[in-house]
Length: 172
View 1 (tube, rainbow, N blue to C red):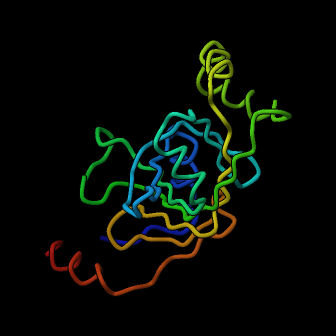
View 2: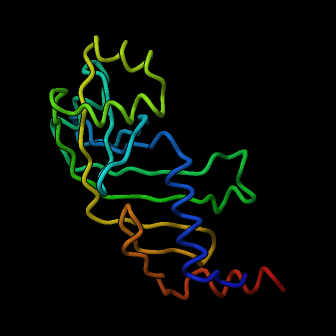
């Protein structure tokens, strides 16, 4: 499998980041066990924002331990190879920023998920969390991993021999 040019892959990542509307959220529960959930999100200025209910398990987990992992992943139905789904993972620090004074974020949520839905949620027990990515990794396919930031200002190919030999053997 021939590696793609960095700019081509960067554009592919940016399309994924714009297309995906929910993220997988990895947190740690009260007993130190991993917990995976998901949340709709919006982006602004290199950060991710989620709007989650206080009764949700992941709300308590993020409040107790703000170190979280998130993953944006291509839908299975759009993936040519389920062993190499296109995805981006970020190590993040989360902060509950409350709901006051964040109208631009709510406008982004309304644009993505519909104003009627967001108006309903704003009347409930939901709260905004700001997720600041500290490190990121984008995987376009076998042998095509890149260290990135959310906006793709950093986009560096991870040069490892691990998959390269196996991919070459499989191709012959």
